[in-house]
Length: 150
Image 1 (cartoon, rainbow, N blue to C red):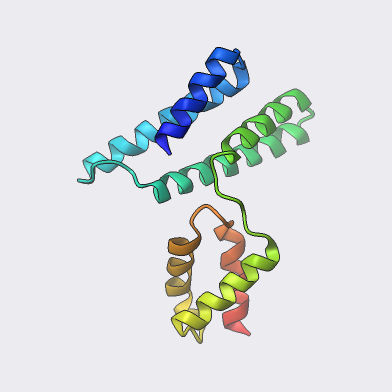
Image 2 (cartoon, rainbow, N blue to C red):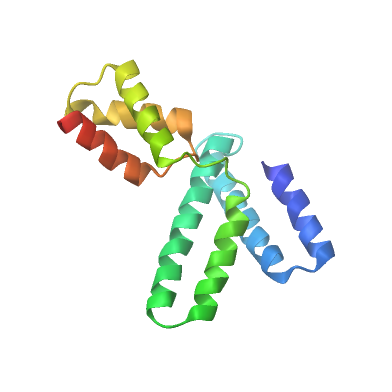
């Protein structure tokens, strides 16, 4: 993961793609911050799964900013956030569709033997372990709760 981002940053620098360079530098800095935090916790460096979570969080932050800018009539800043989202998404695995997400949730509920909302934490942990970076866990949480409630 780290090598891929470093290579992309070098290519963007050579191509003089300013937006891409600044976004990839920001991603690289975030990875280094996460690695430092991992070292203080006693690990060598952050795992790829942790980096995928980091990227998803970065995308979510940019989506929120993009909405705020659009609501405030700042189209150029909203477009800038959109460009950053697309650049970061390149490093995430393919996102599951709503249909695939529903199937994955149903399969995980069955595999974990979940029967009530009390089992929600167990199901969400299993989903995060299997599908890290491939689904929006906020939406998945609502679906899991609905399936376990009804």
